[in-house]
Length: 544
Image (cartoon, rainbow, N blue to C red; front, top):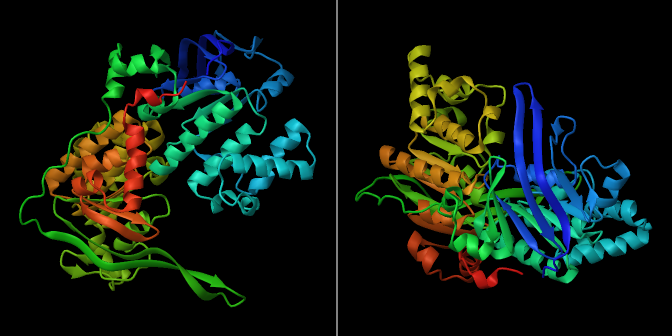
């Protein structure tokens, strides 16, 4: 509960970045407070200034590239802007801790769990090795890390996304901070893990009496977690208020836009008599486990174990499940990008035993769009070169002029200015980069498109735009989609048929409405319950 004592006071904060193209004003004169024990949310789309504001509190911005033209940040009355290093060290990690969106990039890949948590206890608490190990185990058990003692020697890549996030939370809580800054703490995890992490944060907050600054673009998370919320756009706070009031009576047009932004609607019905594009039965993707000096195969990781599916023209088959359930392995196996067993019938022909050279002509008809467009687009190629690369590989187009016309047409079709073909991926927003990825696939005129978490890294309003675009492309080209996602709102808006996977097995599948609204299997019910808990605007559940 809030006590009325202010931990943080931000007044007229401005942040500017010096760039070769001139000064960029990232934060433009914002003010807010955080009281002891309360949760305050900063909400807005990418680029709104949320994370820059949070990093300013701890003075973690890349100075002198970043600077504060004006403003004040008081932590219990101590000015942070311009504070000496020893004053900052007394606050960072002690009074205020921070957890980040992607734990895999925040944790040291070369150090095990014990060493990473111990380091904080050595530096800030001065504990000896034995005492630090005991405290580390207490923290890992506090955050609900299963088999904590066995995980002490694990490296980050050996943990799941949810486990890595729990380690990050344990590190942040090591010094029992007064304020925890949580920067998009659940964006990168599955819906069930998301619900667990949010419940964990609420429980720890109540137990430790700490305040929380929650940074997110997901309004369902704000509804569940926060007491007060500030909506940011283009570096400014455009609306503030109690969560109950803001969601029921939003005043600013941008706030209303955010609330209405989640993907809606349903895909167009599959036309009668639509031909089957892809199918498989009893499909398996097994990865060998090798041991011994001779590296003999002693067992297998059964990533996909006996899944059957079919996708028709104009149909979307959604594949849902938690990380490690086999969703992506299923897709890559069907595309013949990893080894698999079982028939893969594409356009009436089993392509499972075709050699690479025989497969190449079919590759243009079977395309994939990945989760992270920034990671899947070459930073050294212009957008025009990225989109046109497949045309050159497959020998499509009589000459450069005809290929350029195809590139321009593909960019227009996905809603991008054709002139943008001369720019590079880093010059685009996340949503624009995903449109480039879709254009790269669509320029080849595919019949089957795998969409692997194509919206999970995007803001809510951008998600809705990409979903609308994908549905339009499906209608216009009679495309067959295999749509992989852990976001059930997006799956509902895209899918005709849904397959629920767990540990490599399809535990339930059927028409989308039947699976999403009336699940039969306990695991499917658990998935739906976790998603439902976050979707529903239950104001009685809002903390504090």
